[in-house]
Amino acid sequence: MQFFIDTADMTAIQTAHDMGLVDGVTTNPTLIKKAGLDHETTIRQIATITSGPISVETISTDAEGMIKEADTFLQWGSNIVIKVVMTPEGMKAVRALSSRGIKTNVTLVFTPLQALIAAKSGATYVSPFVGRLDDISTPGMAMIQQIRTIFDQYQFDTQILVASVRNPVHLLEAAMIGADVATVPPDTLMQLFQHPLTDSGIAKFLADAAAWTAQ
Ligand code: E4P
Image 1 (spheres, rainbow, N blue to C red):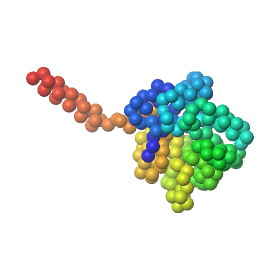
Image 2 (image 1 turned 120 degrees about the horizontal axis):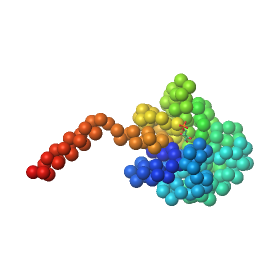
Image 3 (image 1 turned 60 degrees about the vertical axis):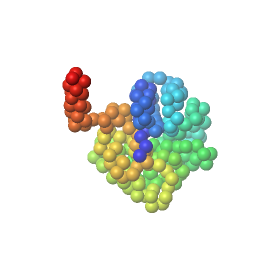
Image 4 (image 1 turned 90 degrees about the horizontal axis):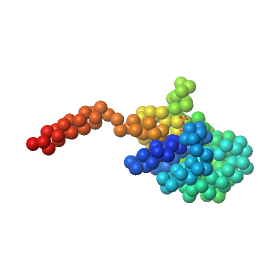
């Protein structure tokens, strides 16, 4: 399973990249706003860190506007993926962009049938949001399993990009199901390292090494 990092924060992306944990980056308007720089500068900077796919979200509500934005975004790096919302106009844009060989990521997906629509439109990635479903007492990971079953059954090439990841268990379950990608917030990525037995094991080894090197 590939790890994308779900942030526009340059320091966080660089840190994760240096550990070999960035296969790609996902952004959205909220993350761009949080990072504090303008959209183009942010994406261009991210493109200097990673050669993996960078999802850049369109904000137009009509297909023509989305395609126009896409043509601008594609100038910002050689690895840009156009993020489009799950609407009828969005799917028109995905179809047009994919027919030109442009990679797309369909976002704000909350049901397996929305994922099926995205795949039929030719999306490169589909982003089902697990955390936001969990927030309304609907098990997000059940949707991932259903999408995996459907995509395997009909041999779609569209990749399942698990989004709205909130904790390590989301990642464990995504990997067990066989999701293609999970996009992970920086804090959750760092949580993956944590285990008390790792910490106590390091402390013991360091203490023993100190005693041994003092001999
Ligand atoms: C990624 O593409 C999504 O925009 C992101 O994972 C949404 O996460 P959130 O539900 O925590 O905002």
